[in-house]
Image (cartoon, rainbow, N blue to C red; front, side, top):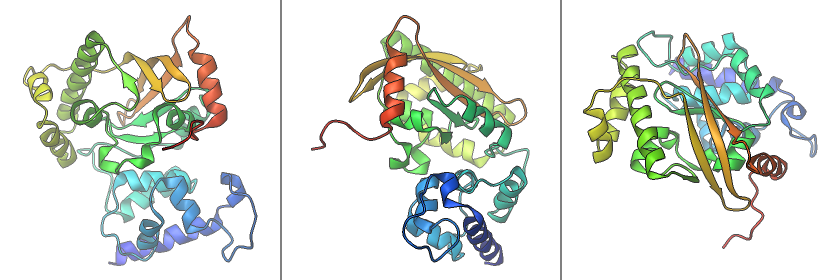
Length: 280
C-alpha cells in the first residue's frame, strides 16, 4: 500500500532525527543509526518491536489512532506531524469520530503535573496516555492490549487496576460513567467505535441495567483507594478536566487530605514501576 509505505518512511525519518539522550537513552554502545533504535521506540510507545518493524515496512494496513498517538508522543512530533501521521494511517479528521489526537498544549500541562498520577482518555474512556507515576500507582498499562485499556471495560468486564470500591462508591461511579458514555453517543452518533464498545459492554448485566435508564451526565470526580502491592493503600481524589473541542479527559489523582497518600506517591515516584518484593 502506497500510504503505508509513506507512513513507514516517515516513521524511520522521525526515529532517525530524535536524539536518544533527549528521551532518556544514554549513548552507550556504538549505533548504526543516528537516532532511536526500533526497540527504543517500541519501549517508549508501549508496543512490540515486531510491530514497529511491520509499521516501517508498510505491512500494517490500518494502525489504530491510539497506536499513532503513542508513536507521536514517543517521537516528539509536532501537532502538524501528529495530524499528518493520523492521515497517512487512514484517520483523517472527521467530526463524526471521537477525537484521539492529544495536542502539544495538553502534553505541556501534563508535564507540569508530574508529581501526581494522571492519565488522558478519549470520550469513550479509552486510555490514550499516562505518566510514569500513574503506571507506578495503578500498574503498567502496556501489559494490556490496546482494546482493553478502557475504564468501562475494566469496570464492567474485568476489574479496575488495584482499586477497591465500597458498594456506595461503586454504584456512584458506575452510574456516573455510564451517563457520561450516553452523552458521548449523542456527540458522536455515527462513530463505529462507540457502537462496538457498547456492544461489548452489553455482555455485562449491570451495564445493561444502567444503560437502559438512558441517564445523561458527565463524570467529573470520584474517590479511589488504591491497593498497592508494595506501599499499601493510597487514598486519592480524582478530578476530571474535559477539553472543550475534543472531549479529551485529563484525569488527575491527588492525595486525599489527612492521609499519608502524598508520602506514598513520593516514594512510588522514586522507585517507578519496579517491584520491591520478590516475584514468584
